[in-house]
Length: 331
Image (cartoon, rainbow, N blue to C red):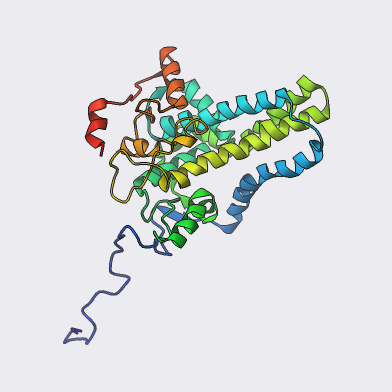
């Protein structure tokens, strides 16, 4: 080892001085804090409540539905609210606010943000900032929910799958909205929707409870509506969204080239439930495109909703797929 003649110190850089270079297979460094800051531990309590709360449905089901059947009103309320809040996430939070795949009228943008907030997936500004960070560091250090965080071994990928699905919510890091969502921070309407997130979660459960009581006229009817149209609906949509983070980076096909280390996949079984979000490889190949299911027989309900809103004049400047651009990125 060479040493300095003047001081006798090593001329080789220390470990702290050597920049970390990701090789595509190793676990992410334990102290990896790229684009994120450590949150106080008390802030994880609301996260735990949001994640665990829908599973109260199991206890409620045992009490309310012992020996009874689900009713048509429960199914109707669950379906309607699943579509409304799901499109609020996919069309509003994701394709609109995060990637600017279209320009909505101001009132519609607020309505979509409100609907997405009722999904119990976090306030609109935090959601957008986290997803933009995911695209900036996909499947490499800095990605908040990569299933490859613990490496590419079988054990590492199983551990990473759990992390990407729900574990990342408890990692204790906060994505800086000032860096990743300054446009939303500058929008007073989005700031107001963000502040209203707790109240919108309450509203998301109060609506099916109230509708069940009004339609069925009994407390039992209100509780079954709360169970299926509230708790079960929230839990299902949460896990479908989180499955895009986890499964859609591990399972499926990759017809389009993406950036280095980006392993996003297309997973057709999730297409309908995720409103087209599971055409994830296509999305990562062309993030600002308003349609993710670009090939034949690729169902994309979010794109259909965007097309309808465009036709009635509520949104403009839609970034529809460009065949030449897509063909240039096919494998």
